[in-house]
Amino acid sequence: MCGRNSLFVDRGDLEARFDAEIVADGGYTPRYNVPPGAGLEVVTNEATDEIDRYHWGVIPFWVDEPETGIINARSESADEKRVFQRAWESRPCLVLSSGFYEWRAPDGGPKQPYRIHRPDDPAFAMAGLWELWERTGTEANEGEDGEDDPTEDSERESIPCVTILTTEPNDLVEPIHDRMPVVLPRDAESEWLTAGPDARKELCQPYPDDDLAAYEISTRVNNSANDDHEVIEPLDHEQSGLGEFGAG
Image 1 (cartoon, rainbow, N blue to C red):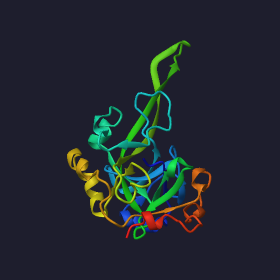
Image 2 (image 1 turned 90 degrees about the vertical axis):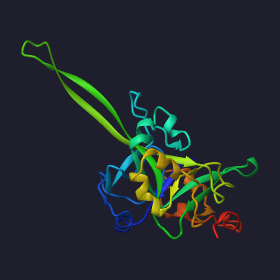
Image 3 (image 1 turned 45 degrees about the vertical axis):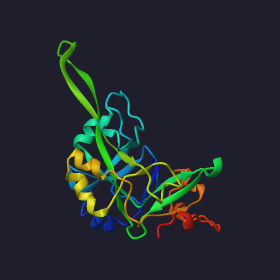
């Protein structure tokens, strides 16, 4: 599961990190608390030198109206799901992140949020699939005799959208949550975009390296309106969670 993301590296550093230019409408704004249905910065297999912004949540192609969509897809079975089959075959992407958030409910108590990030890399990539939801509307033209002309003007609404692939948790995340996003090692990012479905399946593993870290943060992250640096501040108490969950 990945229900919140962040991306707040400086624009120049972000473009240098992924060797790509930001082309998203409206430019780039650092975000500390990105909820489902908002925009996620992505690099797709069709434009590896561009960073665009896609709606977070794959909208099923059969629905008539836009919706939040499906924000996560299980990597083990995404290729079997009708909504993801086309994307799995030919539409991989990188979902860019400065850290994601997970919630833990110790002993059935209130859920405690954690920030999970890479201290040595201010921006990294999670494995995603992208889609294009489309709706076509028609509007009849009025002919000279006042009757509707059979020729129609089509108005097409298109929403590029993305889901984040998940897998089993690694040793760091397992005490916090039973799923984690597929975080790609840096040397696997290009392969994710260029490989075929079978090779990409092999990349959907729990993050193998020991350079992830986790720490408790305040419940300010629960409200997506809180979108500032305070969201990522460690919780101010002695048991921060780093001792139990931090990477060595």
